[in-house]
Image (cartoon, rainbow, N blue to C red; front, side, top):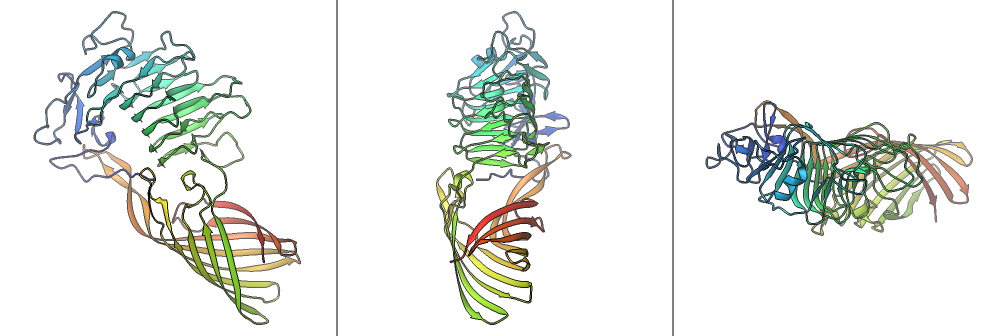
Amino acid sequence: MLLGLVGCVEPQSEFRCEQPCECRRGDERGTCEPTGFCSFDDTECRSGRRYAVGASAELAGECVQGTAWYVAPEVTTAELGTFAQPFGTLQQAVDVAVPGDTIIVEDGTYGPGSADSTQFPVAIDKAATADAPILLRAQHAHGAILDCGGQCAAYIQIRASAAYWTIDGFEIVRGYWGGIYSIQGGSHITISHNHIHDIGLRVETDPFPMVGIVANELTTDYVIDGNVIEHIGRPNDAGNSFDPLLLMLGKRMTITNNVLTQALSGWHIETAASFSGTIANNTFVGPNMWMDREGQLMLASGIGDITIRMKQAIKRSPRSGFALGLDLRLPSGDEKNLLGTGAPAVQPFVAWSATYGALAPHINVGYQWNGSSILAGDIDAGVSEDLPDVAVYAVGAVVAVHPRVTLALDVLGRYIIDSPRVRLSDFHALDGRSVFPNITFDTGSINELSSAAGLKINIAGRLLLNTNLLMRLNSAGLRDKISPLVGIEYAF
């Protein structure tokens, strides 16, 4: 299921936020509070944050509820966690934080301490609430450097009992296996605006993955947004090993607005059958680990839907023919794993063809009625809705270049009726100057236009081998520029 980011109009007397990036005051970044209003740092408040002037009349200028705990590097004495007497480690602040609190980590480098390649300097194992989350953030974007030094497994571990935490703005480097680990569970975790890089980078025969962020199949409701993740993995080939930048296996995951590059031995994003959620508006830079293959995401493989075609000639002449046909689509694949649509379909069509020497032009027109699929509804709630109906058409010709080989050229169209659509739009931040890309949804019909060129080879009798290159002719719909296709056709 796709989840859009809701845009806003120009700031007015009262401004409501939904995402942290909406709270900007010049170069100062703020926090989008659970109340729906922006706050900004203020050390005079116990929470370390004060509501901005765009908040409601009751909250504007007031201190946010909760307590701010401060952490600074190279603190060796027992301190109180205040602005004047900060803690020396992140774990000290994590241990005392309660729902509604904020942990502010000052600029500097924070090493692994005594943590080895199986341990983590920071372990989060407590739950906050939706109305009072806990925010763990760098005081200035990427000013706090969490450096494993090639010693600790990953710098931050999210455990099964963790819930409603935000980890924001850090530079996380040189983990032995990863940057942020969540392999025991956890829910409602936001990991945003971090720079995670230089993970692993050693010759390793153990197939255990090196990753930027991992969230296993026990995790739910994670948001991975606005991070830069790069230069991760092993430089050697360890057989069937994969070192993805993001290993996302949980449910209701949102992966948006990230920059992903330099996956040395894996995919930029790897998922599995347990995954559900949104992957949208990410930037992929450079090739994957297989230089001769396209793609940045590892999803799934297997059998999709099966289509049964029936066609009957209605009228024949020495040069031309007219036929009626029917395609039946059977939902035999696993639509939750992108293997098919999950919906039956019926598509009647008409076909005309003619023969003029070695040239055989043809025209096909049909209409596809689609059934109900969970892909059109709500995957997490298990609610299905009807997929949009589609009018299809094709115009082309076949040229015989050999008694058993023909060249096929076609223009193909699909007119998708009243389909939900994703659009890019501009979002205007609170400061009235900053503009960010945004995703919105609407409903409308679109016309997908493609061309196809290929060969049909008569292997034996009525058995045909089809090879095609499908090329898009316009930008409507979500399609690759060029898609190679290979198929077997048998006429009864």
